Amino acid sequence: MSERQLTLLGTRGCHLCDEAEALLRRAGAARRLVWQYRDIALDETLVQRYGERIPVLLNAEGRELGWPFSLLDILRLAGTP
Image 1: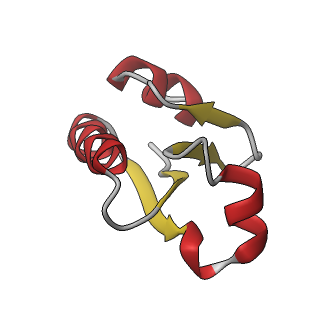
Image 2: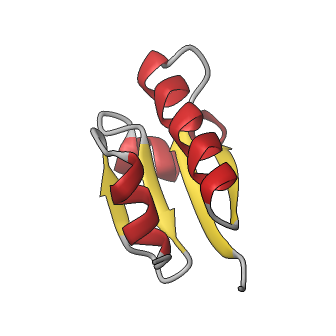
């Protein structure tokens, strides 16, 4: 099974981002997922685009999943069965 790359967009101090990160950890334990956390505060373009929408999850093809999302939503975005 190949690994699936996801990116979680968020920022420090965001409790919803913490919840999304916990879900990603659970998804990673259930399936072979690779994900990274990207702090939007370090990129003004990301702040303008996602500042009021975080957390947002992106897959390798650029599809977005906005909060709230579930474990099943994460697996679907990653393309895992």
